[in-house]
Length: 148
Image (cartoon, rainbow, N blue to C red; front, side):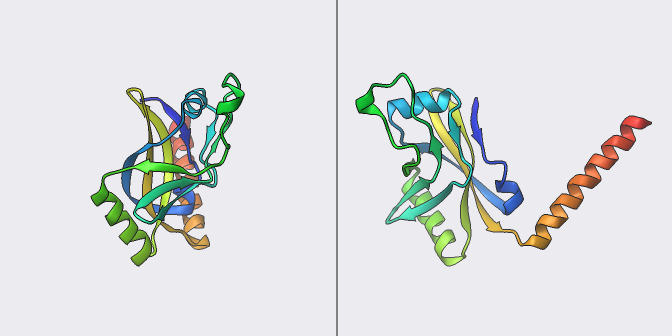
């Protein structure tokens, strides 16, 4: 499994709980561009329209070697491929419980492009400060261990 893109802000901005894997419905030029590393999940999110889930605001740059007629929009919405039962439960969690579906990373599995996303609750500023304190404490411990 080769990781194509990671959303580094996801764990900082959200308290993530359940993780899911979904297929991405992409065109051929989008797949080639994503596999070449021209993809970003910065600022992207998963939203429900009807009985379907879509990845919104993710950037997949145009593939430079693609024919001009097959070029795609960089930030178009992309459909997620999941089982119907999973979609229903995720829509219920996002609408009823007020949780957010946050994309975490995009990777390849065999020849397919997959999206890993998680159910998360937004952190408040205090929670973010605690995360920073824990990270700094881990760094200090690591430094102290190396010195001895």
